[in-house]
Amino acid sequence: MKIINTEHLKTTDRAVKFDCGMVSNRILLESDNMGYTLTKTEIPKGDWRHWHYKNHLETCYCVSGKGLLHDIESGAFFEIFPGMVYILDKNDDHKFLAITDTVLVCVFNPPLTGNEVHQKDGSYSA
Image (cartoon, rainbow, N blue to C red; front, side, top):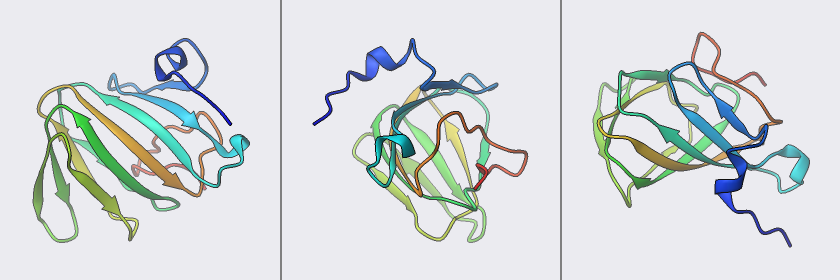
């Protein structure tokens, strides 16, 4: 059994910081042997961010804040707010706009190894 206080991750190498001010607190990684990654991702209010996880499937649960999700392929827009879940089950190319500071709890499969950051195409390496 593991018990993790996500606030304690902020002072470890599991708090992966991005240039845009976003922080991905990596709760579970490949080395934890759970078969998936769990993150608490803090996205500051700001500009559109392009993400396209070509090598991972992702599910995001909004726990606070308000955002706008843009499905690039279909052109559809979706409001994201607490209680909303979005599932990128087809390696969906998308953009996210945090209208207010937003916190998402995210699951990645396959699991992340540690300090992955977005490449220019919006993906994490395989």
